[in-house]
Image (cartoon, rainbow, N blue to C red; front, side, top):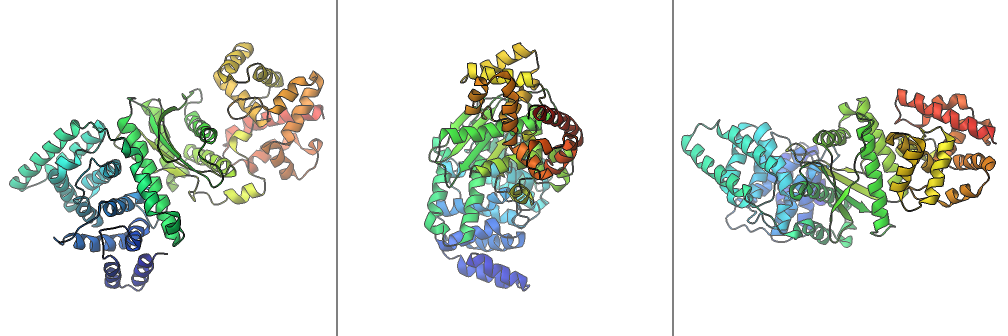
Length: 560
């Protein structure tokens, strides 16, 4: 734990806030360069409680009032990013700044030191800062709202140079006008009105072109929190991770701001691994999983809707971060973003639809961790409410029982359980894979024509093929698929039975019943089995899947 955090906590635990202020003030002596003291202070801003945050920002605000004070731009950016990164924290302690907190006024004092909002570093902050200001204007007390209004009216010419969507600008204008209408002092009201008008006019005409906006922040964070620095204090790793998540969420928002598509969802994906290097194949595998997750979410309300694939939008230089776009309707974008937000809401998790998404995301966390991948995913679409959102990560401690259930081989993912029960169609699918091994669209076209089934049914059989190890996630035939093709017809089902035994599904059922031979598995226990090992399946879905499972097992046992 950093020295500042430890000392401040000790004083507050002793009911001595004055001692806490003194400890912070003694530590915060030099704002002209990023050093150990600044990193300590940034940790306090990012990871501290609301009370610790307010004390730290109060001390900083008093220092900034000194006319002789100077502030390095990298220090300024780090401190602002640390505060704003609280929006990405999943810790109750380091929650976002509350709407009525006096810290909001202190933060305004810090933002006045930014002299160039066109700078790539500070321009990156504006989606989060606009969202922060909207809360201050609409939910804060009158003092916070008017001070926010004063900042934008006074600093508007400079702040307007940062990129934002027209929707975001209109919402800012609406909330600022609402506060302005409540101002009684006519002289101040006129002054603020002129400043706001200038801000809106300038913001409407901004054409931001600096490509460094995509990479400048990541480069700076890597410099501030080098490998050597990370070894000195565990909180340095925590704050770096939190700020990196904040950067990812900001990049998703920028994808919306700069995007060429009028609708849809911007998605930023940051990948990290101790064993894998930045490679196209690993990134493609992660993107496939995210596409499937999105499809599962949409299927909860629209079972027959098929989402388009992601469109690559931007590769971020110097990092394993990919910016994507998916061209979907406003309703589908709202559904996806609201379901993502539900991951962090206990009340929403009680809802069956939200809980289904949580379980699906849990499934994908396990898969990604099995591949030694840490993945952060941020989303954005063009509404003021959903432009800047909290990201989700494989590192979030939302789930308490994931590791234990997986460790005992008693956890099944929802897509480990088949929905296709016609074995002739499974064999036809495998045959098409051999004929067109590098052309999944042709496989789909031929299968739909041959079998006369819906696109949804095709997805069921595709998944059955994957469960049986005959195709990988990119619908390419595996060696097992080529072997199946060589076998005589009467041996094919027996071969598939062996594939079933070696699948996640087969292993889980053997372990659940504690048996050693396929003949000992009991088809009539399929429903009970799924209830115990696949929590992401709802009651009605379990009944349908258990029928398919019984069909599979009886077929395999007949040929055993």
